[in-house]
Length: 379
Ligand SMILES: *[C@@H]1O[C@H](CO)[C@@H](O)[C@H](O)[C@H]1NC(C)=O
Ligand SMILES: *[C@@H]1O[C@H](CO)[C@@H](O)[C@H](O)[C@H]1NC(C)=O
Ligand SMILES: *[C@@H]1O[C@H](CO)[C@@H](O)[C@H](O)[C@H]1NC(C)=O
Ligand SMILES: *[C@@H]1O[C@H](CO)[C@@H](O)[C@H](O)[C@H]1NC(C)=O
Image 1 (cartoon, rainbow, N blue to C red):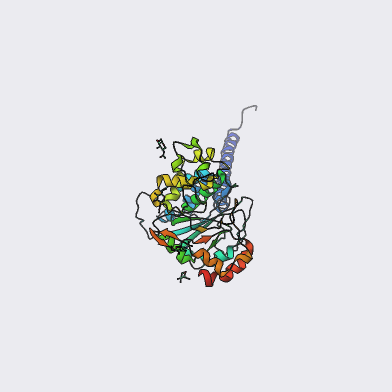
Image 2: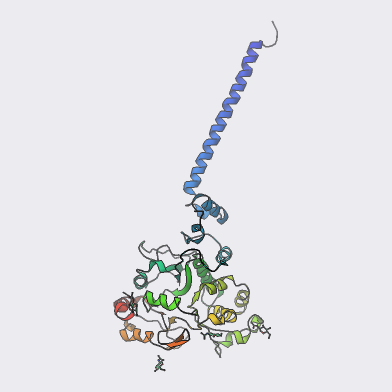
């Protein structure tokens, strides 16, 4: 018979097609589930290590989702990894957050942020390590070096993994102030940091940690050099195009090596009024790192300024650069001379004026370590 299909066969093949369809559906379901499980796990295990390739927004989301505690802790604990991938604009914005309620709802131990602006290695690190030892709860360290430099401090050193994302900084150029703002902004991310000190690789401490902490924490002023100097190296560097933001009478000069409190640190990193003026109109022979912060802060916060620096330096040999001291310069008498001068502290006169000194070469390390305990009280 040339009839159509046998109804039984048609029925069977129809059921067969439905069965095949179900099989495929099941296969896809299993495959899909498998892939999503694998990718979730890969994200969980590779996510944190791979964070450099993920954009900041995604990265912070994933941290909040997976590891971040949801209590107060998540707002007050310092960043665990200093090597974030924020660009400067993002970093400065984040660091400018200021709590408006002035009483901390937890026991806050204020810390000093020691910010090292260096080219590369820290040849005097052994002296600093001795200085820091035993005071771990009272300080944090930040290092800005040339981006090409790879630090190799041992895990036991307080300098271990304290490098921040850095860029090339040139003396006398705005890139130097950018580096200083980058240091301040990174240090501001730790809410415990209350005082911020800028140091270089050639700086040494000349007092022990407890003296430094007491001196800074009990001062009513921040120690930024700021003075009105006549002549070519002072007022001579002023450019009338800076008016009306800065007039000649407001123009200040001071050493680059400063100490500021949290309020002034935020003022420095949030500034957008003076920054473009100084960037454009203070170029060598105007050295912007000697004028920008002292001038801006003297206009807005004159009462918070001590107008002097805590870092001793010797200009007596003349010339464009201060003296550098090596192995044969370091004697008991030399160090004692640094420890005695005249200045004011909280409106009283005192002979204890300097907590740090520069510039010291690598060769000075051995004699400094030998005299640290008997002369400087650094044990
Ligand atoms: C630190 O130095 C001061 C004076 O220089 C001294 O009185 C004090 O005992 C020293 N502190 C420590 C912990 O060595
Ligand atoms: C600079 O001088 C101008 C004109 O006298 C004045 O308006 C301006 O407020 C001054 N700037 C500062 C920072 O005092
Ligand atoms: C620092 O200088 C400013 C003027 O720029 C002045 O108002 C302030 O009183 C000075 N600070 C001290 C501690 O003398
Ligand atoms: C500090 O002042 C005293 C008294 O005025 C003076 O005898 C001493 O020489 C001064 N010291 C320094 C280092 O200027």
